[in-house]
Structure formats: structure tokens, C-alpha cells
Image 1: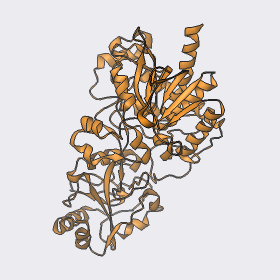
Image 2: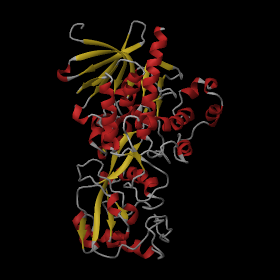
Image 3: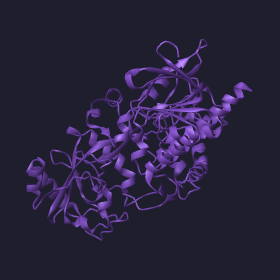
Length: 490
């Protein structure tokens, strides 16, 4: 101990106890490393966002990623990218210029590694007792294939944490990462943390930053998202622990940025509810209006899994950051629609549209006119609620492309809908070994990132890949850190 600072030495120091941090810790310890995990939450609430999610994975089975996996990532790899730089990625990685190795885009080398390691990573998780299933989800219409661990993200956290404890990983709970430690040569050699009583502790070893994004940091959200940040909250309790220190520390150490810092993975939720992930995903079977009673979006341009994120982002930009879903009694013709609503609050119900508007605080005449215009634009046809049925409006802006039934049969139901932040897109640029790279594309010695702290996403989130990303690159980071440590001392 030096002064008031306690010093501890390990091979690997991990910040974060979600899927990425735990995967890093367990893989490093299984490789023979001495490992410590720093976690802001209590032991009972450890696990970050992972603890609260169903942990869907974009797989067609336990061994293979979905058919659209790499295609979807590459279609959302960035915006207006320089084609001369993108062309370099067709060459071997060693021949890429420093500009491309540090470029803020979705690196095809990283995505290729993610796809290749997904199956082996799930097989590794199965050795810890995790089972996978393609059980029914809240997505009653889907455009791709998904599986999930039985027991969701909580099962992942508990299985990995138990394994870590059994093989000697040290945990410091209620302790927050604060800064990276450098030696006299300016090399990163550890991380300073603070626990109860704000007493500092210096943890020496290679560092894996796996402490989430910044959805729990109001200042960072306002800095990157602007005015709409006031309307956005974390989708689940675990997100409140994610304060952005890992990203801040990495950028301060010279890391290149990656992922879209101006966007986040958005979900439409009921703002009245305090339960974890109180989603409202039945909007394709009604109409969405703003607080003035006007429609603003095609509620059913595709299956719900393909459009909910963009719609939730649009809601965040509306006055007050709120919309209202209006449905009539024919919602009950949709099989198992209740699966798509996870709020613990009852809908607002009324016998007439004007009465519903009054209960919602929406101008009655405007909502009545909006519903009237929508009903007049419906065209009739066969309603097939579990497939894209082409039952659309005519001559209406914005249109409704599927499942466009008149809103005419009482009682009428409504849910308020706001936008929640599942996780932030912006983070640190990493290579396929989860090493954080600098603005010249060179790995920063002894520094790794995984999970949300690793920037990856642009435009549309490639759904059901975030937990998978955390598991894959956390495991890669832990193994690589131990092997690099052994090579350095050989």
C-alpha cells in the first residue's frame, strides 16, 4: 500500500460485470491468468444491462449466425463513407492504411470474427450449463432468426459469475473505474478505481474495458444527443450503472472512436411503467399520433423487429418526447398480441375517440379528424396479422403499409409511448482481437474493450447481436490479454 492507495497486481483487470466483462474474466482465468473484476453495482445487482435482457442472439441455430448477419452489418456500416477507403478493406488487414485501421465504421474484419466465433462462444457457454432455445418472444412478427439462453441474460450472468468465483477471480463490488495508470514510459499498466468511502485502489495488469456505454450518464447523453436526451431513459435498471467511464478513459488514452455517437439502440416503452423493458410493440396494429393528435409515421412498413428502433427514435424527437398508440377492439384479432406489451400499466380505455382524446389530453377534434381520415383511406382486404399482408391505406400521408384496419370498433385503447435507450452506439475502435487502437490504427498496449464500450453500430442496429458481441469479444479479450502477458515475460 502506498499512502492511502491500496495496490493489487493481476494479469488482467476487467471493468464491468455484464456479459462482456464476465466473458473476459472467465476466459482469462481459464487461460491461467490472475483476474480481478471491478463492478459499480452491488453483488445482488451485478450484470449491467445483461442481467435485465432476454439476450436474443441473431443465430439460426447454436452453431451458425443468421443468413442475413454480415449483410445487415455491412448495410449499416456507416454513412457516406469514402469509397476509396472502403475499397482498401478488400486487401489483407496488414495492408490497410492507418487511416482505415482507425476509421469510424463497422470493420468487416471485426464482423467476420464475430460471425466466426459466435458458434464456438455459444458452445463454451454451454459448458457452463447454459441452454439455448428458439422460444417465442415479444416479437410476434420477425424478419430474421433468433435464439436465446433459457433464463435470459440473468442466466448468463449467474453462470459466468459462478464459474469466475470457482476459479479464483477476485470481485470488487460497489467500485467504479476511474482512470488508467501509466508507468514512467507512458505505457498503460493498470487502472485506478474507487470503492466505498471513495478510497482509491490501484489495480495493476492489462486492462479490459467492458463497463458499458453512457446511457446512465445524463451529461454525456446531452452532449452527444442534444435536446432529445431529456426525453430518453435507460430501458432497464442495469443501464443506470453505465456512466461512460470506459469510453472516457479510452478516448483520453488516445483511442480512436467508433460507432455512431449521435445515436443509440432505441425501444418504444410505456413511460408510466417502472418495470424492466416495459415495451409497447403492438403499434403495427393501430395508429401512432403525437400529443396534438396527428400521425407522423408509417406504423407498419415492415415487421416490428425491423422498424421499432427507427420509430422509437422518431418519438424521442416529437414535442414532449411522447406518442400515443391508438387501437380499437380488433386488436384482439391478433393472436397473442399481449406478448408484445410488457408494461405493468393498463391502457387508457374509452367508448369513443373524442372521449379517448380527452382522457389522453389530446385535442379531441384533431384526433377525431385523424382517425376519420385514416379510416377513409383504408382499402379493405384480408387481415393476416402474423405476416406482411399488404393491407394498406390509399392517398394518405404518411401511409400505413400493412395491417391497415379502420379504427372504428369500440372500446378504444391507448398507450403512451416514449423512447428508451437500450445501449449507446458510440465507443472505442477495436481490432478483431478486441485491442483498442489509436488514431493511427495501432493497438494501444495492454488495453482492450468489449461489449458496449467497444463501438460498432451505425444507422440501424443489427438486432440480437449486442449480447453476442459482448460474449464473443469479451472472451477474445481475456484470452488475448493472458497470452500477450505470457509472451511479454517469456
